Amino acid sequence: GEDHSYSLTNGTTSAELLRKLNEQRDIIALMEVKMKEMKSTIRQLRVSEARLREDLRERDRMLSAAVSVRKKV
Amino acid sequence: GEDHSYSLTNGTTSAELLRKLNEQRDIIALMEVKMKEMKSTIRQLRVSEARLREDLRERDRMLSAAVSVRKKV
Image (cartoon, rainbow over all chains, first blue to last red):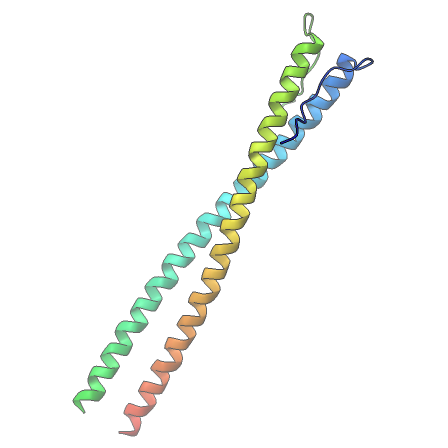
């Protein structure tokens, strides 16, 4: 796609570049925190999903058993 | 915590700052892609969780019905 890279223009001082550098560093730090939170959320959801699937299998076993009992009656 | 901000040192040229700035910009772009993927994963997992909970409720209704039938027999 388009090239969004920074380039030196007349009047761009080191101080300005430095300010931008620190701004971006803060953005990266915030994004890292956000990504850690999202990773944790994904982990929790996967655990929850596994538990629900197990619950479902258990209910299906119970249903099979219930059907067997009724067939015997 | 500690301050990790960049500061001008002797010999830090604008070209070096610029190179670092573009490196950071690339890191941010990669992180944005990764975060989009994670958001999509979270959305899918939430949908899956809702469906599993609904399946579980359905099984519980079936079990209740099965128990009722057996009590009537």
